[in-house]
Image (cartoon, rainbow, N blue to C red; front, side, top):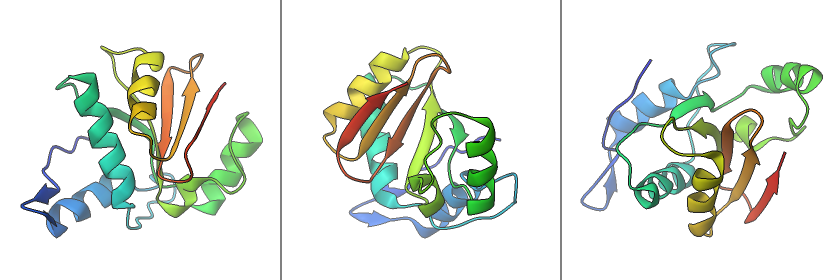
Length: 136
């Protein structure tokens, strides 16, 4: 699946575009959709701008239901019990043409939310919670 949309025009969010993003970032394991926090979309967009790339992010994980998060926590190290994914406030992303450290550096430069670098797995976690960073 792919989504290519403009979600902000003339100082206003575009509801149809947000609906498309919400569906794209759904918990596909449970086929559940919630409203994705626009603050996180803004951090992701700013990160991509700072990276100076037109390559779309690959989304590994967006929204997760509690059920999905619990299942992942059992089989994957580093899954937070009260993950921002459950609240629609986080995304795990990668780019082919940028390294984990480049993506994380750009996300940190936004000075907004959490940035987790998962070098072994090749992705960066970006959320709109408190400003913090970590490496795994």
